[in-house]
Length: 141
Image (cartoon, rainbow, N blue to C red):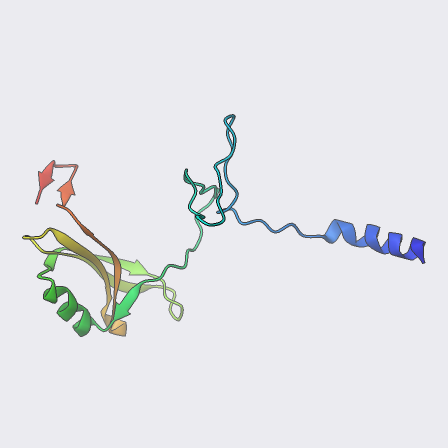
């Protein structure tokens, strides 16, 4: 029976799998590795150690195009920059999307919005506060 278990163990050992999350594999230096605190899981240094691009699932807020326009208008934000691009969706490989930075010129708050008008969907990708700076020309808004 011992021999059977030993043979089974030696047979399956080469097929064992080691799972590793590249986002959690902290890069270590000669000074040591970044500290990880279970009660405060944010590392003291960035720990992204991924050799290739990867798909990230991020929470974004989406609504209809009409509701999004009403929402940013409520904060006095108006379209300041618009550009067209492509985006993948769960149901379609590529969809044309319009990206808009809506900005309030008085408070300098801004919202980056992705509009997929074919799907009647608008999603907030980011929000913030501050002036728009175009580094290539040195132009500020």
